[in-house]
Length: 268
Image 1 (tube, rainbow, N blue to C red):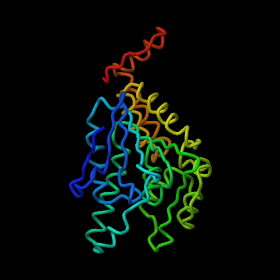
Image 2 (cartoon, helix red, strand yellow; image 1 turned 120 degrees about the vertical axis):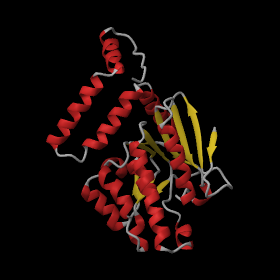
Image 3 (cartoon, one colour; image 1 turned 90 degrees about the horizontal axis):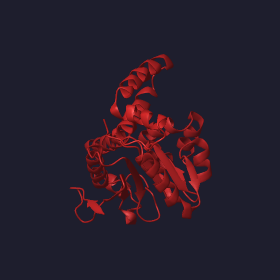
Image 4 (cartoon, rainbow, N blue to C red; image 1 turned 90 degrees about the vertical axis):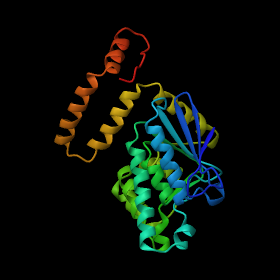
C-alpha cells in the first residue's frame, strides 16, 4: 500500500492507494474529520487520479473512505477559516475539476460506500461510474439546512437520478437510506455490510478482465453521448463503434468468441 500526501497537508497520508490485479483501491484518509473534502484531500485525490489515468496497468478503480463514514462533504471549518471570494472560487473550481476527472479518466471508478455520504460526499458517489453501499449507508445533500444550497453536488446528482428525486433531496436536505438510494439510482445496489467487500471486489475484477482499450473507449463515449439528442448520439456512437472495430482488441475479442477461447488483450 502506498500513500499520496497532499502538498497542503504533510502531517498524514490523505489518500491511501493499494494496487492488486489491475485494480487500484483509493481510500480517503481523514477519518477523524469524517473524510471531509479539504483542499488538501482534493489535491491528493486529484494527483492520484491523474497518475492512474496514465497507468495502463490499472483497469478499474475503487473509491472508499477510512473509518465509519464515506465522506461528509466539504470541510466547513476550513471554509469558514478563510472567508473570501477568491478562496471559495478556488475551492469549488478544484472540486469541479476533481469530479470531471473521475468521469474523464480511462478507468471505470466504483464507489464503495460505508456509513454516510453527504453534500460533496454524495456528489462523489453520484459522480462515480458505479456505486455500491452497505445496507446501513445514508445519503443527503443537506446544504439547504445551513443556508448553502448544494449547487455543485446538484450537477452530479441530477445526472444520476430523476429530477423529482434530486429536487426532493436538494430541497429537503434529509438523509435517505440505502434502499431508497438504490431505488432512485444513486447507487447500483445495497447489500448487507459483510457482503459489500465481496460484491465490489467481484465487480472490479470482472471489469479488470476486459480490454483496457474497450473500457476507455466505452467510458468516454458514454459521457459524451449522454447529453446529446438521439440523432446526434447515434451519429457519434456509430463513429466510435467504427473506430472500435478497427482496433486489435476488437478483432481478438470477436475471434476468441468465435473460437470459444479466452481473449488475450493487447490494449490496442
